[in-house]
Amino acid sequence: MTDCIFCKIVAGSIPAKVVYEDDLVIAFHDIAPKADTHLLVIPKEHVVNLDDLRAEHGNLMQHLLFSIPKIAQQQQLDGYRTITNTGEGGGQEVFHMHFHILAGAKLPGF
Ligand code: 5GP
Ligand code: ZN
Image (tube, protein in one colour):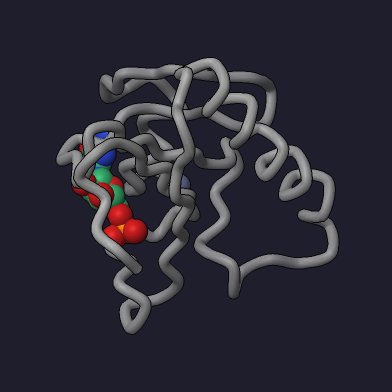
């Protein structure tokens, strides 16, 4: 998707502070952090959100989910919150699926 900001990060055409990357996913710091640590984990493939998933994404989603604790461990996070917003009603602003990883002292109760 040429007009997708996260596809541009995947392509390296706009910069991001990348903390993890493999064949299928990439993780980087959120540009406007809402916690001491605020990372975004995305599939390299352009998938819009959870509503866009099809059976063929099973391996990708398994891989993405398993990457989250790996990244948290690498970042030495002492616990973390994982959020994915789906659709405008769910607060999604970037329509390339992403999982927020939030950690640190400022996390509000939920
Ligand atoms: P959403 O509301 O879609 O779940 O979250 C989108 C997130 O992407 C927001 O937290 C926002 O700060 C972040 N974001 C938007 N544009 C960029 C960007 O160009 N680079 C990075 N690193 N994060 C971005
Ligand atoms: Zn995209």
